[in-house]
Image (cartoon, rainbow, N blue to C red; front, top):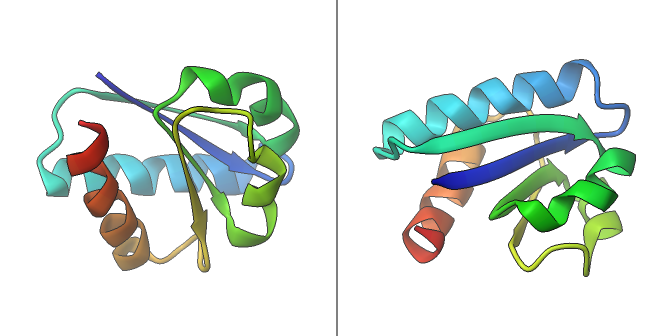
Length: 96
């Protein structure tokens, strides 16, 4: 099962939106077994190690360097479905 963590500055609204967009993108890509969680970047610092992919905005993702053996995905636009799908699509074949 693919495990993905969506993180944002405060762990409130935007990480939940990213979570839903990731789930939609994974379904469109054809991934059937996955779990997507969400939290703040601060929480992600201690949780990232348990995930295959961690997604956050490009200006926050560097805070998670070295905290996971998984892939870090920095997004330019958190609301861009196309960007999320493209970035996850290229990783899913590598991770999965």
